[in-house]
Each structure stands twice: as structure tokens, then as C-alpha cells.
Image (cartoon, rainbow, N blue to C red; front, side, top):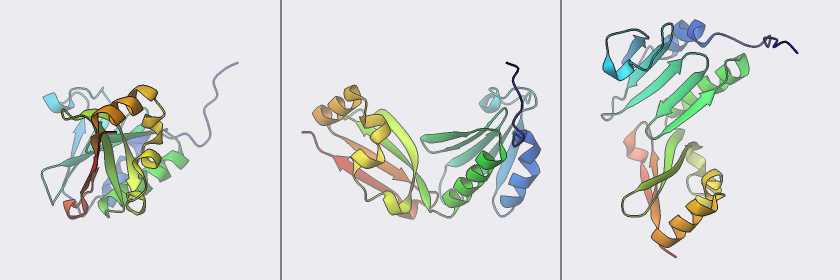
Length: 172
């Protein structure tokens, strides 16, 4: 069976100007594949990375445009397929991060902060249990056992750090 292009499929790079118009009130940089810049050497020719500088702290948000969309903030990144519905979801998530409605949340275990998983979580859900917010990581028995044995913490990182939160997880 021959692969057929989805009628809703789009080229992420074609959305560059539209994304930049949403970011017009922010300080950002646009980097393209093939530039002589070590930080962006991973970009292939024709691909783009938009780097949004955080006005509150020394951190950045990245939007990669290649064969898909990738949104990265703090320890979390999310991939979006190259179709119009996923693009709309990317834009909703981007706006929610910039308005402090969602955050990057990361789960770590032990004193050495071994990373177990990250996701974007709405501000309204950060008071939920760690088990509920990190079900995708804690369904792995190895991770669950390490967290129980060593304890750990969850870091919720917002665009505006005034809302940042760290939750300690005691050993069991």
C-alpha cells in the first residue's frame, strides 16, 4: 500500500512567520540549519529553531521546525506531528507556557536527582498527586521502586518563576 499524504499535513517550516507573529512581544532568535553555531549544529538544512528568551530568568524556550514541531522548555519537550490539529495544539501549549498556565514538571529520584520523566502540566493540576501527574513514568516498576527506596522530588518550572514549586518525596 502506497503512503498517502494526509490532507491536514503541513510543513512546519511554513508556519515560521505565523509563530513569530505570536512571539512579537518577546525577545527571540531564529536559527537555521547550516549556520556556523555549535548550539544549533543539530539542525539539518532547511530546519529552523526559534529560541525565545525568558524576560524573568536566564532560561529559554525552543521551538524546532523540521519534519515535526518540537516545543522544549526547562527539562520537558513535546513532539507534535506535522498536521494542522497538532499545530493548533502546539500553539495552545506555547501560549499557555508564556501566560504561566502550564509548566514543565520533572520527576527526580535520590540525592543525585536522577531524572525519571517530564511533562507539561496545567497549573491547576500541580496539586494532584505525584502518582497521577507522573503515571507515565511510575507505571515502570523500576522507576517506582527507586522513588520509593530513595525518595525524590518534583520540580514545577513556570515561565515566570514566581510560580515555581518543588515538592519533596520522602523515602518509604
